[in-house]
Length: 278
Image (cartoon, rainbow, N blue to C red; front, side, top):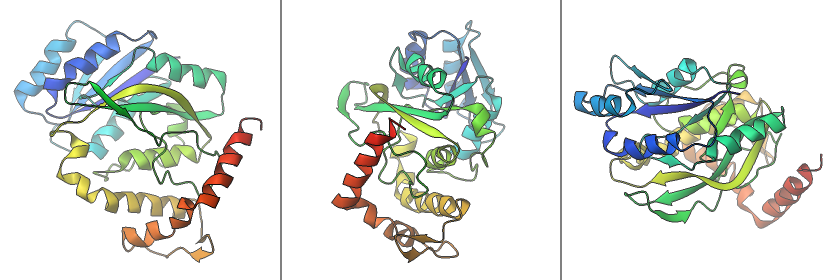
């Protein structure tokens, strides 16, 4: 089973060495790393090319012009040749058995379409700071699951063959393109949580998800959830009618407030517990 590591690069060469080294240390050997550069500065591209030179497992592509994360990630999936895919940001890293652990879940259960693990927030030098505590197994087959609050997080891997049966990634998204992908895949089968910290997430001032665009994430995420509601042909949530058209994120997230109640969470935990025996 071949694994495709998907790397969307844009002016992040100074941190890419850690990502590169983490791939070289993988215990699973049947992998490729597909890099798509989104019109970085020439010296930034060259640094990446110099680092991967001579290793045929790394394949480098370029966008003709800066196209944004949605377009770039969508292209990366199309360019990949693996059975299983997983995104790794060029300024982050994965632990040595991250790919092996993920592939094992897909080999074990053909109904698993997406696997995800725990992640660790790190400082600028990739020193661990804290775990992302919200990551946990979610209930499968729930039409009212929208990954809100976030539970499915890095290291996220998925079957490419199943992705091909979805509406595919919305390339127009500049933020929340990952949430859009997760929800579409969730609708096609089971998802599996790997209770290990397999992903090192670097916090630094130049991170794509940490810059000014983050202010717009609420808006984009609201649209992603609303589209999922319509895709699933839902008309009511918790007895409240879903609007016919999208207006603003507050209207969407208000529909999901009930999922934060203690009673709802207790019932959900019980369902997830019994899910493993079904």
